Image (cartoon, rainbow, N blue to C red):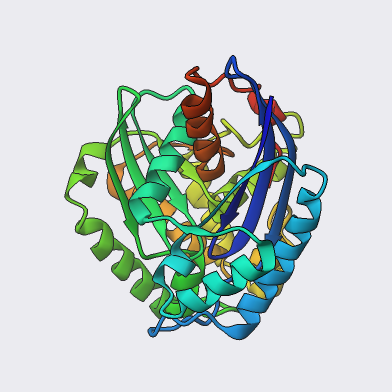
Length: 321
């Protein structure tokens, strides 16, 4: 039995999953931690990680380090995504990270991030053909899956924080601002030639903003016994909820059941890629995933270390985050 901790240092939040796995491929999650740090806040065109954002992130990581003390023999794999990947001052951050945690931080390429998303999802959801969308704080990953195989993977520099900061107001969203954001996203999607191969396919959505859509839907439907992982939503229901969100100011959004208060200022921008893909591709349903990058890293580690196929626990055991 081996214990492994996977730390995902994202642009909006930092998460850690601690798991144990056995030589037959079975694994069990021992604990999950998450803190909203908004590392990409205020990076601007020069892509500079800001001192306050760095401080918030390092403070959260200190809490993770303390939690790891319960597992002194644990393997640790720490990875960073778009915010650190894009940062012009990334070397300073990497030095501070290693000084704080006493182990290194690996910066994933966009393609590696997309690949781990694919591995996490294909091993936990029953999908054959689908388009996967992972909307983070500063990037969005797209993966086209055919016959359970990844045939195209790409990372785009758009995310909940970047879209919100570049185009949208925090309080009442102006129609002209939303239009500018929409045009920019459509142009970016238009440059992905293979997206036309995803017409009418189900959209598998992950990332905090996308999962918020599922959480709002569950609260509205008064569903309490169904996990987010594998939850389905029709295109009409998704667009109806988005329209409802658009009609509210910041305070009203923060009071919506299922929407975390600290996500209220970026939820409009965070959901825009998903809504635009549904419209662009004529997708009729969204399937939500709790599994993604951290699970992908775990599953690849299990395969490499044991030579066995991963035996995943039931979806209901996945914690909502």
